[in-house]
Image (cartoon, one colour):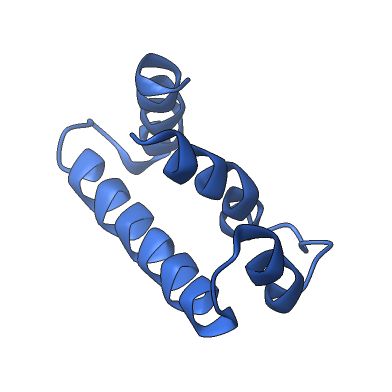
Length: 80
């Protein structure tokens, strides 16, 4: 992953956790030097990717309660 994309992800991942982000998209867009609609689209795509990932992992575990553990393990293995 390009260093800039990693920085972008680091700044945007707060919008994926379900917690209330502190900063509005407009402020994040200014920090990342992109447009506010670009932030909106990127967050939407990241959320969709997360949903698809969870669905795929769901096909590999014995029961749905294991999905969160598998996601955490995957992120641990591939994370920075």
